[in-house]
Amino acid sequence: MNRRTLVLLAAFAGMLAVSPGAMAGVRIEGELVVPPVVMAPGAPPPLRPEVVPAPPGPPEMMVWAPGHWEWSGRSYFWVGGHYVERPEPGLIWEAGRWIDRHGHWEWVGGHWRR
Figure 1: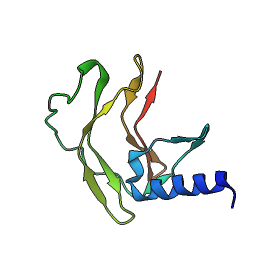
Figure 2 (figure 1 turned 90 degrees about the horizontal axis):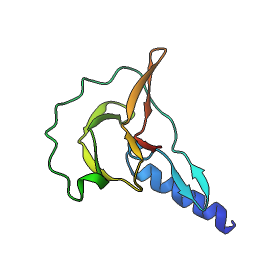
Figure 3 (figure 1 turned 135 degrees about the vertical axis):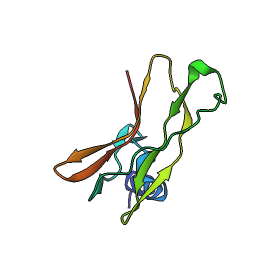
Figure 4 (figure 1 turned 30 degrees about the vertical axis):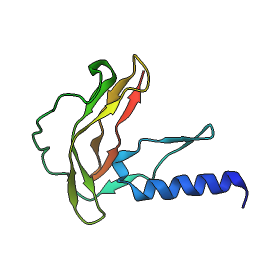
């Protein structure tokens, strides 16, 4: 295998090791590697209330990513909210969300937008 193939395989294996909703896309040597689509057969439970702590860094560089339900392949499990560091000024964090796709629920992971 060539180096590019090995890098892409390593990136994909790393994505499988983390929760599906944690990654909205990863840049590998200039290419966007998108994790597999996560679908669930039914709606997630209601969101849990969370107490948002003080940010661990400068408030203008830290954004709260709220908790959400993830699908394990058999059931939903809760992933608590956490702070994410703004990679550059002006970017806006769009929280992950579940979308109803004709009775099946698709996870759209959190990501930065301009």
